[in-house]
Image (cartoon, helix red, strand yellow):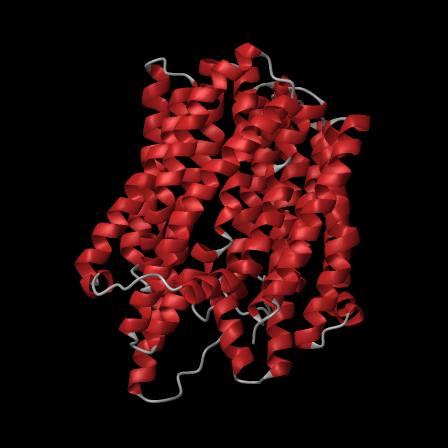
Length: 522
């Protein structure tokens, strides 16, 4: 997205500072993706050898359980950075102290509520899944460790959100990277010493506690005035914070139901071993999908600024460009999954952990559907429709669970993936178009003509080719895959080149793309 300097010298300096900070945030984000790849992909075979497939499947299901319990914060800590940043821009230190004081009070109540909810859900889920006495004894100790550490971390997380609002990006980025590295070190070291699930619990529990404590120390160093002069928490201010976070909370809870319920459902209607199969088949697509969204979503702040200027026509152009970028990137992820996921999973954890070509195809289709709906949801929420998007995401999560239980029971793992695909296409997409239309006047016909149809016509043949390659490659043909992958990747990039025209490409990058014939000469 091009930016004009405009304004006075101070405005220009602010723009440079914000752009630099955005670049730092993006850089740390990609580093975290790299560490997530290490912990989420490379460590899994090591973990399976140390704890066993059934036990690890049980742990994954319990992790999804805790993801639901952690949603009791009602989105307050998610919106606090924005509120702090707004007060900081006005240089309202008293207002920032008031926000911090009341947010901490909400977080303390949340901590107590989380402990109760997590324990109750655990009792209900263990009875629903009909866990035996041995399974309960195996999981309850590590699970209680994580619950206790998470409850302690809730109030401390308030200070990390304050640093985000103050744009202390280097410190927070370094802390996040350090905690990812600590997580990996704890998993490897403690598993080698024979601690089993306690190793995974410690790796999950201690880094958030340490990072939040470091953020408290940092706030005391750079903004000590925010920790002084607190009064009693104000119930109206606490309610205001909860109200501000409600839309974000509903969206997050809906997403948790979409992303974190599958393991529990599989555990209930199929078996713990199949939880691992599903997770391993899904893992690459899950990581790459988030990576594909990163580039498009980095322009959301600029989109909000543009919308505030009242330039609706330009807003529509940017929304369409962002959607096109997301679809191109997500299409590349699906291309990789169809062609190489069977080989990668078989090489990574064994042929028996790949869920089959039908499951793989449905998971790939879900990546596209989720990317399409996110391409509608993200700009719509940025342009003010946060509550509507939150409600819609929550409805999608409920529908996903309602479909996954019977479909999983009837057709197994493919039914779980089919539920996600259906909830995205038949609920979120049509209503997402309607919500986006309310703020941009972009109709489904315009989206189809300008973005969806051209993308679909370019990518359809490539996806058929990728599926053929995926069927043709033997499961353990890693060397052959390494030969073919660069060629197919180059083919994808080259074939999609008409869709690059008109995208916001940095001026320093454009000449390279022109030389490679990916963009026309201006």
